[in-house]
Length: 394
Image (cartoon, rainbow, N blue to C red; front, top):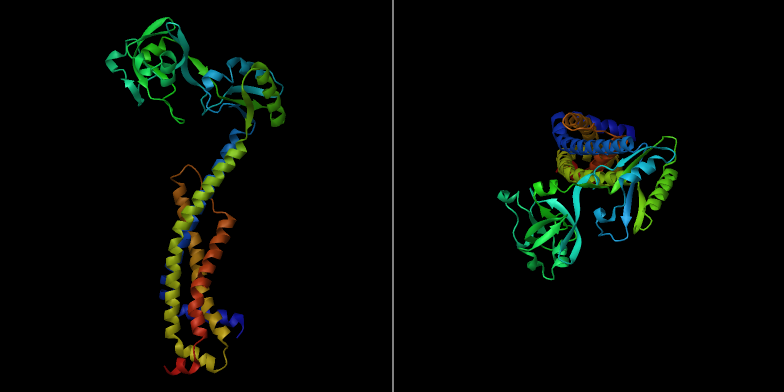
């Protein structure tokens, strides 16, 4: 029997059991639609990330500083100053320069010399309100003490000023000509500590000291026709001239590299969720296998007669295999349609548009066909190996 006739026979068999065929398709439809929905949302998110990156970095380069000592404090190094912004603006092709957003840039802190008799060091001050401080010795200030000159020292400052940090408690230290009583000492700062490197005073005390801006990176906006690498080299030369003794290197942040990392993360998460969601395809495949076994059992006589009149085992196998593929293939196409519709509904509630790519469409279609082959081959193989005599009379 030709392949065309086998296909017609398979379609005719499925038409004779429309309801059963549709119910078998439901598992495939649910599985494929879930995967398509997840992939569409993931693709839409990746496209949004790429477009946002291109929009924000079309004529902008980000310059940051890499200190030789990775644990160094930017506020003490001062890799960028406001005078740097002015001098870089004069470089050919540069439109404007500003402190980078989203980094340490723009953070208001207070730096001050602190002394106790002949001991002196530098301290970085912040306010304690709203922060959970890891106190090693003493205590933190109370709200009732906001107007008092009290300070909680960081561990390193207390160790520098006093051999034993605990001895700092109750002592008066000089900050910009004003004496502050030490009421607490913080525990030694860990590598990732966000609060252990600062000493703390009240908001009222800090406001009276003045602040300075710490800039950890700068955004340089250049003319569209300029080469970014060439402009960066000039910017780097200018910065090195302004900071001849700084220990470290100025580097160019590649927005595309960051975008690729985000794309990889999003792609990995999308694939993981899609695989988890695709477990329903396995359930749907089991349903296909089950219904094909039922179909083989119901059509034993038909199989026996066809074998008796000369049908080859291969023809029997292909007919039942085509039936399984049609069930999963049509279910897959319906699943893609429903998945696309679901993703568009989800798109109403998220700040980006889900995207169904050609790759997702082809991949989902192939997956549904493969499910039909994998879960249909065993029942089809069983049908092809039936003994004609037993199939007719038993």
